[in-house]
Image (cartoon, rainbow, N blue to C red):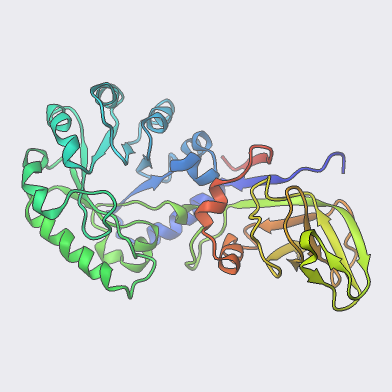
Length: 349
């Protein structure tokens, strides 16, 4: 161990494998708009574009700047999912052949000026009540009901197939569809929807977190390994307390290892005792409060554990969902909040 550091190892072969799992659940004619917003969910926007160009049919991002960055290296369709709001931005879309979502009546005057120059995804509010055109406003968007454009919506509860809101949204989307030319393309499903409602896939699905292994469906694997090294080992007697606040008291003789990582690296400070980690292929648990730069783990039952050994906080062998389920968190949040001080390594780009 020359100089310890927390590391993020991202394996793009696993991302591509996850995409194949998604595709296997859908009709062969359904296209994949891979969502790589927020720096590809922490997996690096530019590297994602390079690694996935042969695996997906288009890229979805939030900000125009992201779309322009992708256009530098890919000729695939690029969708600015929250739209643009000025004539300069519309000119940039036109110049770089970037598609745009229109989700508000306030966007309509400018959009109509570019209706013959751009491809639009028209987003309908079917019940999520975040972004989207209300059903009683649809008639005003008739100039954009063209075969080249796409009618879309976003599901609020796709991860819970029993939620009645899903049925409401599907019915509302069908109503909206019947107000159009009925020959536009359609897009309804996000990551969870692609698994739970494949019959609603239509022309485009928009998987994001599933590509990175951040939801719980068979065949998907966490594509990033977040790890750091052990820099100290302590042997404690019964009834000794551990870490800030001393929230844990040992119940027996205990061996703990101190891992060179903390909330300044992006590991959640709120992680509770019992959160799983892996050391030397053995599962262990966090014990005591996570601090800025250090995490304590119980290695009493791990043979030959030593300084310099790696501790995996999540990986293909320890799904990120182990952490999120235990701690009431979201895999999206953990993936996107990695500190810049964490060393990055990218495999199979």
